[in-house]
Image (cartoon, rainbow, N blue to C red; front, side):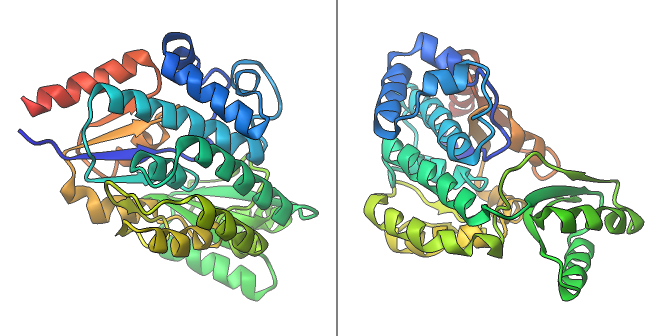
Length: 314
C-alpha cells in the first residue's frame, strides 16, 4: 500500500556533542558530506561535533552543525528507501533542512547558508542582553496578552515559538524576560524558565538580518521542489522558489507556528520521520497527533525507521 510520510527536522536546542558520530563512523556518504561542509565553511565539523567545546552553543556553529546531521540522516534514509514525502517541515532552522530534503537546497549550500544565518542573527543581537524563555501551562491568548501589556510599558518581549498546547517560547531582552517570570507565574504558569540561548529568535530584534539573508536565499534556493515544505510563518505548504524567498526572511522576525502546522496538516500523514538528534519534535508531537513517529539519529534508528515504513507498505 502507499504510505504517506511527513519528513520533520529539528531546530536549535537539539544539538549535543557526539551527534552524527555513528553516521560518520559507518557511512562513507556521511564522511563525504562532513568533508564537503568543512571545506565550504572552514568549520572543522569533526572537532565541533565530536570533541567537547564551547562553540556548539554559539548560533553560527549550532545551526550548520544541526543541519549537517539532519541532512545526512535524511540522505541515508533516502538512499535506502527512495520515497517522496507528502511534505517536509522543520522547526525554525529545521525549515532549511526541510528544503534540502525536497531538493530546493543543496545540502552543502544549506550548511553555508545557515552558517551565515547564524552570524546575521548574532550580529543583530550584538550589544543587547537578549534571551529566550519557555512558558509552560498557559494558553496562547494569556501569554500573548501578558506580552502585549508588557510591550505597552516599554518592555521588549514577544511570543515566538508555538510548540505545543501550553508550551510557548518568548523572546526579547533578558531583563524584560526576567521581569516577566513572576507575572507568568501569577497567571498560573506551571513554569517560566530562561533558556540557554545567545540570540532572540523570531522577533523584531532580528529585523536587520532579513535583507542580507534574502540576498543569499536568492542565490541558493532552487525552483526544484519534489514535495511541498510547510512554512513556519503560515503553517501552510509552499513549493516554489518565489514563495520561499518571501517566507524565509519573514521567518526570522515572525513566530514559529509549529503546533498549528502539525494540526493543519496531520490528516494528510500516516507516519512522521524526524531526521536529526534528540527526538525533540517527537516530544512535541506526542500531545498533538496519534500517528507513529520515528527519529533517525544513528544507524540503528535509521534501520528501525526503514523497517517500519516497509512494514506499513506491506
